[in-house]
Structures are given as C-alpha cells and as structure tokens.
Image (cartoon, rainbow, N blue to C red; front, side, top):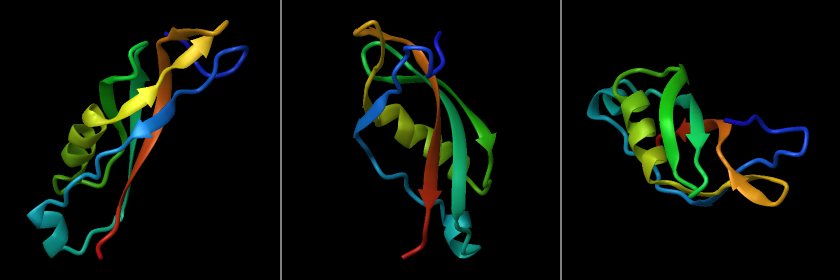
Length: 95
C-alpha cells in the first residue's frame, strides 16, 4: 500500500454514483460531509473503506455503498498502477 507523494501519483475519479439520502437524515434535514479512508486498487476499484468523519443517520453507510461503485484511475509508481490509500469526501446536500 502506497501513500501519495515521493513519485506516487494520486488516484483520479472517473465515474461517480451519487449516494442516496436516508429517510432519517432527510427528516432531520441533515447536511454535511462524510470523510472516508479508501484503498484504491490497481484496477481502479475502492476497497477497505472506513469512516474517518461521520454524519450518522444512515449517511455513512450510504456513502460507503456509493464509493464501492465509483471507478478510479489508479495511482501510479514509475508509470505502473499501484494500490494507494486515499481520503474521499462524500457531500450530502438537500435540494
């Protein structure tokens, strides 16, 4: 597992699925950002996702479910894809 820097490039988001709102969060009019720690593997998929900063009311779980479906361009070392740890912000805003 690599961290960005010292010749390691950051993964880039290619395809994003918006997370859904839970009924509890909608009723509470909760907005904010869930911060996730993610491993982006060589194939551009997210694994071993954990919550770093929580919102609660089901939004953390919805954020994780959405990021599992996201597609990334993987980080690289010496031009070759490598597993990179990253932080991902998932924003929740009521319309």
